[in-house]
Image (cartoon, rainbow, N blue to C red; front, side):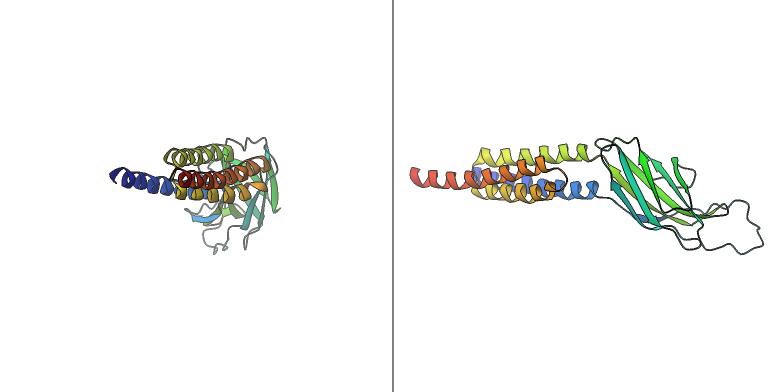
Length: 220
């Protein structure tokens, strides 16, 4: 009885760990866009004139164009004649002089090339600009580093499945199967090889659960 209770406790912990990993993977792997404030920088503006109200760009989107490039699109902020975009490999640039300059101009799109999206994450910040003045807030977005996230995520899923096989718990088999199939469908559009592998793995889990059930009946 104690052994069975201990097994269930370990199973619950494994389930919570798997769900937390799924949530973390989804959050890290998706493009994040937000607005953040900073101390306004104004250059060459008459102190007696009322400063123009500048807004940061809106609808910032970052599109993966392959393993080595990405496209950024946005709508210019209110009152802005140009948009400033800066990039960093460690954190979001917090001011118009942080990170590296990627774009400064009147357009609403730019490409970033020479990237290593499989292993490196890139952080972008964008401001509205007019005559040397910048918006009081900025928008951010990130992309890349997906391969690292995938490896950690898949290893966690494999560990959970090993636990299910080791304890031969039908409920854990079924949960592992549903997790594999759901995640497999989400991978189909971006990495069909991994998607098909996970779908097959989920099918095997269902078969394993049914086989163990019939085996136990035969033993009984």
